[in-house]
Amino acid sequence: MIKSHHLYQEDLERILQVEGKERLAGKSFLLTGATGMVGTCLVDALMKFNQNEQAGITIYAIGRSRDRAALRLGEYFSSELFHFIEQDVRDPLPASINADYIIPLASHTHPVAYSRYPVETVEINVKGAENALKKAVACGATVLYPSSVEIYGNGDDVFTEEYTGKLNLATARACYTESKRVSEALCQSYIAEYGLVCKIVRLSRLFGPTMLMSDTKASSQFILKALAGEDIVLKSKGNQLFSYTYVPDAVQAMLFVLLHGACGQAYNVASETCNVRLADFAFKCAALAGRSVSFDLPSEMEAKGYSIATKAVLCTKRLSDLGWESSYSFEDALGRTYKILAGLT
Image 1 (cartoon, rainbow, N blue to C red):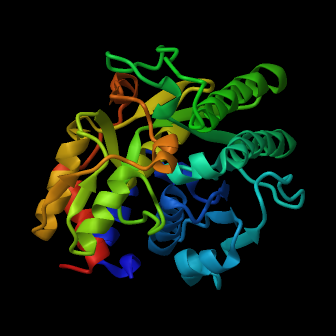
Image 2: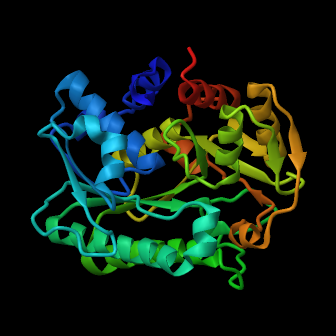
């Protein structure tokens, strides 16, 4: 189990080094998508804070499956500070819950879902954001909205937060990119019309030990193949250059923006040491397992969900000027992911 691995415990302690964390003590969080890659790590970190310092943070974790929650977060079910609610985020959030912070993490975030369930992808993103924002207005909560590098689409330059994007709407994958853009617009609209306090993080591509074993993102598939001791098949030439972030780094950045970011401001979250070409990501994963990399074209169904971006690198100056820097190099983060998931010391 990854929770007991010493490297993952180190990661959680690193997250809790975030400046100003004492301001979170006694607060309550409402999280949707709580059993996903980011949600699980965030819950683990907040519950670690409770364990270490009796921080008294209450967590309302929302997900579609109690069974999956039991597998991912079951050790917290007996805690009076943790409450799991089984529901679809497209439905209004429970009126009985009041929270200080709301983070709507629920989303489809992998290519197969985009190609098979594009309508559901749009609905989960947009309705999920809308319900979170409505709930925040009702209970006076601050919202941290987790957006994505995907909103920028394709481009030749490094993406700053002012870049307005270059997207292709004539693809099934537009279900994800456009619904995240609409969700950001909803955030700005609720700020303007209702005076809501809302901060935005635009997350780069993520990897880490809390990944789901069903994840179909290329980077996740590389890691899964390495763990299985199999050769890695790359579905392109692998020249794409992307920004990546180790999940514990991303979670710490999110908490940092929640504590120190400006209302209505968007912050790119990435690690400059993790700007990596897709082929290099594959080869480094293969090397961990002593395997090789081969190349093969994707099927028509696979291709529908793939990003057309050839370069998606985030400028992180705004966040670094605010005072946050990543903690992990790419090699360190990838090695930790592999060791934690493989149960290696």
